[in-house]
Length: 221
Image (cartoon, rainbow, N blue to C red; front, side, top):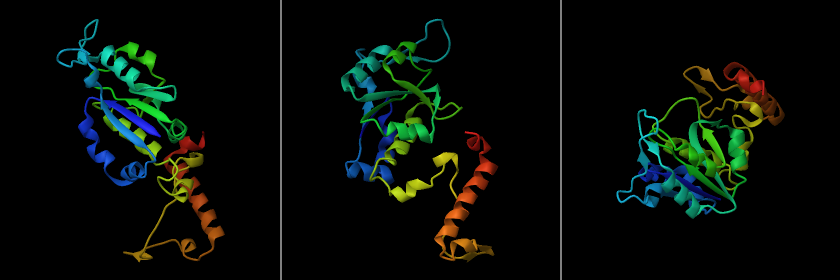
C-alpha cells in the first residue's frame, strides 16, 4: 500500500514515521508513506497557498491551484482521495477496514479557515475523526494512517486483531498480567484455570458487559 499525506507542516510527521508499528511496517515494505508539502506546488512567487474569503469573514482559505496541481501530479487510477474536514463522515473501525482495500490513499490535511469549496470536486470523500475542532488535519491524518497500517497483513499478528474493540460492535475484554495479586487486587480465577472454553466464554461475556456499560450505542448498531 502507498499513502501520500498532503500537508503544509511535514515536520509534524517525523516521530510518527520513525517509531513503533508504523516504522516496522515501513521497514518491512508493507507500506510506503510519503509526506508531501503542497506549498511546493504553488505558482505564486512567494509560494502562497491561501487567501481571504470571498464575502468577508475571519481567517484564510486554502486556494485551489496548489492542491489541484499537487493531486494531479501524484494520483493515478487506483488512488482514493480523502479530505479531512469537520463536516465529513465520522471515522470508524469499519471505515479503516475499507481503506485497507485501496492500493493508494491520498490524505489531504486542511489548515487555517478551511478549503476552497471547489477542491471538493477532486476528492472522493470527506472524513472527520470526531465532533471537535483541531488546528489542522495533520493529527487526524496520523490517526487514519495508523489505524489503516496496523490492519495491513504482516503489520501485527492476526491474533491481536481478532477481539479488538469495535470488532462486531463490541469493546475489548479486560486483560491482566503478572503478578496474580497486587495490593489485594486479584486476577479472575477463570483466566488461571487453563480451561480455554471457559476463558473464551468469560471474555465474550465481559465484552458485552463493558459495551453495555460504556458504549450502549454500539449494541444498537
